[in-house]
Amino acid sequence: MESNVYSKTLTVLYDDPNIFDVLEKALAFEEENRGNKYYLGFEWYEVGASPQTLNMLVMRGVLKISYKSNKSTMYSFVDRDSVKKALEDFSLGKTPAEAAGIGVGSGKHAWLQLMIRSAAHKLVEGRGCLP
Image (cartoon, rainbow, N blue to C red; front, side, top):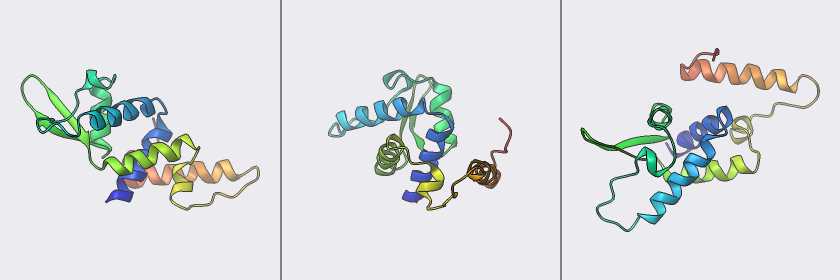
């Protein structure tokens, strides 16, 4: 399951690089509160992201809802270590294809191979190819 969360996180980051800051803040917030026995998770305003962004990360399998009430929704990571590794690899410029060990070749048609594989990957995940 860990590598699955890793690849999902890397794919999310590749699709929207702005998520990097949100995940980085969430990791830092969880690290700060790790020893607190009453810690239930983080809320949207604690990581500087809209609730819609966090819900998208839940739907994509990166976050989970750890507590929900009428007044608040708390989120936590499905696998913190996999997300941390994905953030490190993304900052080094690693693409989801490279992380999966898929070589896309080089030359003028390498981008086409990558686009076709990306579209196939999105279809397999059930997200469709169109934005």
